[in-house]
Image: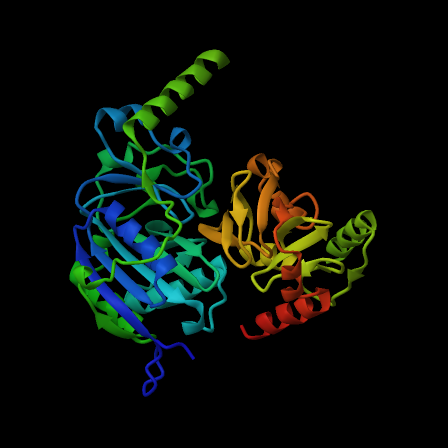
Length: 265
Length: 156
């Protein structure tokens, strides 16, 4: 039995960390460290990040996903995260919920993407139960056919993380920093960004969402709230793949892209 | 299912090994060894070839990216050396035995789907020079691995 399991109630323990406007790079580095170096369960909620950042998945290529010229010109940070999935631009109106679990503490969930995704969809059904339009569609959270939440995961031998960025609100100018990706969900059809996504604020109050999410997680875990500075940051070596791309890297990528285009013409 | 069994028979014939016919679900090849994290290993002298099993690729979904280790890097039994990406998830690939990476499957960079379509053949991931041949004793044979997969799937 997991040492995290509270014997009397039979629910595994989960640490709840509530952040507000924490830089997304700091959040992602923390999550990667907790996934790989901690043996506890974690729920991290970041109520908005501080400034707009572009965040790509592990295999993302900036030249394919990002409009490099305006991003370099406007000094928008571009991060490559440790989980899979697509590219998002996040800011103070993006809410983040991350769940890091020992597989043994969620024994009904196989440590594979679709199983974890189904479990998360069920959890958030409890959060949005007043909205009959909510569903997990392919790998996105949608109201009707409009996406408001993007998901990504990383699965290790005995643990996994499922994290979500929720579009509380968004700035259409920011969306223009992103290219249309080559891999899109089928339900997107040919819609551009503004027709494909929706704003969560049109469906639920911000504080209500956070409270209901904590309640939903609390039906499966015994939550213990801890502050960021209480988290033990002494840990052994671990793989750290989350990183901020340098401006020089972005410029080099742009130069190579322009050279390829010139040669192709 | 019939197509998968035909594929497995062709692979087996090519590799000159026999196939454990399972009534359902994934293909398991005899004469390979298996880790409980669903990697297979083929040992030839002091060299070993690894990949992920048919069970793993089936559960992971379409693989869109494989992160390969650098040549010359050491790998340790049970520890991660790379990852595959599928369905928005990165999943660690763990080393079934310890050694030094001497070859990586560069084809996976352009064609990551080989892990799905040919997990035991064209979808091999790395080759290593073994550092401890005795480690293979800790791995499962095909019968044990088949039972292991059935038990895992039955729990869910």
